[in-house]
Image 1 (spheres, rainbow, N blue to C red):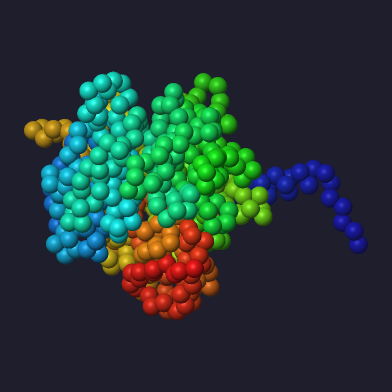
Image 2: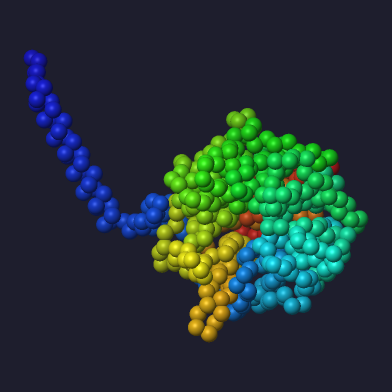
Length: 552
């Protein structure tokens, strides 16, 4: 027997089903809002804490140890907050320097000591002050990190644009000494330093990026102990540069150079030959670049680039922090997933990543903050530092404010006309006490209050870790390659996956791998800049190991 429904009954049934679906979704959403503490932002919703803690890899607990470890230390209000990390005195603990001038030595259980007054970094400061990055680099391969920083010029005929990049050699006792004019590079501006041995002679060379549109960037060849050789860029499009970073984009054993440009100029991915010749391969690798998509009436600026293998597929990915003025929907920083040369290089994975981005992102850092084996991402914007947990499925979940993490949330109100508000200038993750958990260092601008003038403060938050989660850290010692193995890629096989990290300037620190609750490391493989491949089987966990490069 066949049943026929009149058209009006079909319409009525569809109408009733639509009402039921609407009521179900409405009251279901209300139930979710009541059940879970969603935090609404101007750009979206942050996942609730209860959902985050159900992820494979729980949230660590942080404790403010600024007063015990660093003590009350005020820095000038006009600093940029640039941070560089290295074990300056080789006592086994990582030290840090702010703006290439304010040095803090780490004495382990005795905490940090400010060594700025007697560090030897007493060259004149630029006038007017400029915001520029400094970087650690072992220029002479003696095992002690030297420092390249921007200073003012003492030249009598110096006019506009005479600030210089100055080299300070490590004195092996926690101090530095000025290397002299033969090791100065004139014309320093608000750019970056990126160190790598691009010509394969075992000495660290570097790339100077500058923001002045009228000046070009330079490759600087290290002929130690002879003076530096400056090679002007043969790629004329490069200008108005904010940042530059070396990493191996195609796993061929040689690092490429990513250049992040300002003022709507396209970003570049440069393959540089040993003779200094450059080829832009960004288009071949599907890196569209901020400037390519610049729209009329708006200026898009790439501010910083950070590289890390966030999906553990063996290829180093890239995040580019950017700002947009004026901001429109769709403008944001970019996450590029590296699929490898056989799959066409990079793809823009931003929209599917779950990242909550802002109109004024200016820095970022990859770090596995919960030791689950997945690189998490910290993004710094003018309104604060934002933390995104990697769920292991190429997605990120923003960590909301809760009892365990409330200490690390230092957010500023919307920028006022005078700009004098509390704000995060920079944030860096590193293991200050060698316990295997990455701790958080913040540089915070504090506005004037009553009798206290405007200043900057250093905040240090100890990561108490996740119970039962293991780790391994690898310190590299090059013999044929540069002394600290900058540019080397390290793979750790554990938990049925291969995790990859790259030694990238301007920091000289061990490479950290979270291992979750696994009880075994299968092997560690190091791909040295010399193209030597070195494998170490079955390494013990929960310690920092030193790997010395093998001979050919």
